[in-house]
Length: 173
Image 1 (cartoon, rainbow, N blue to C red):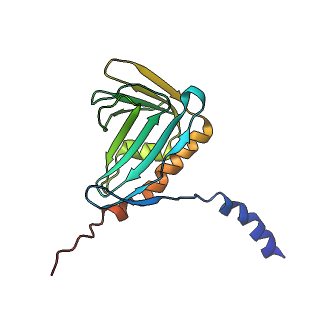
Image 2 (tube, rainbow, N blue to C red):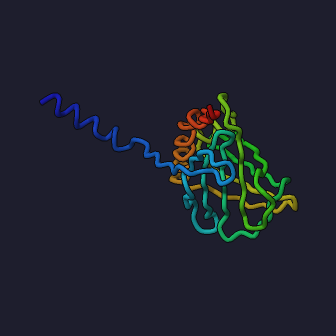
Image 3 (cartoon, rainbow, N blue to C red):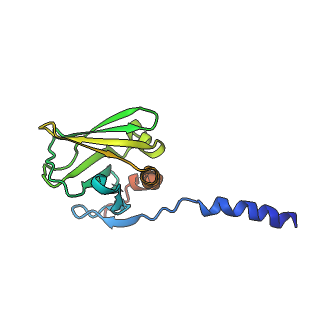
């Protein structure tokens, strides 16, 4: 009887287990494996955007697609993230120049994780402020469920980084 009660108390712990569903893709240029969360729709109203977190053996890429945005981003574009504890992080655009609202944070995939990348996996983001070279700004305020989703997406990808760094190439014999 005691064992049944213990089992009933443990069941809720397993229902909140992290559901990491990553898509395994091939890089279209070098055919290396690339893991991605796929695009998730986050935010609401004017703060709506799509986010995809993907990684390969060289880098981790956060790809933001701002909804209904014609904001132009180039090499001088910046994003400032404000975390729940008032800490801030600044990220430059790692993607190509575009006027479609596409923005990338790119981090190296290395054994010692970048502190900014680690912060994205453990700290809740309150706001993201995108600004371009013309100093046009777009501030996105995240809902609590979006904050949790970003942490979940990041954690799922970070768990697999070490496996991606393993070079599987073998010379012909």
